[in-house]
Length: 85
Image (cartoon, rainbow, N blue to C red; front, side, top):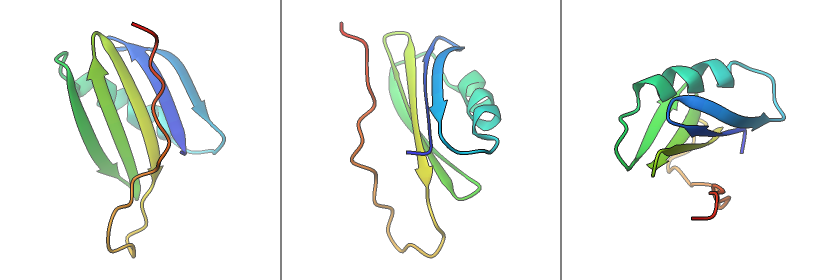
């Protein structure tokens, strides 16, 4: 995973990355455009995959690198953490 966040509504509560880049800026822009309904979304931007989950008012993001030369997208086995219900 390259960048992750947890948000409540459109407010980011926590984010993590060990890399430098504009991940936070891109994620914030996407977060503002996500509908409020429960759903899953995937966006591709600058050779990165952004996987969003919107559920019960929370939004979760996990991102990873996606090289153009890869023939098939192989999702990471990492799981997005959710607060207990």
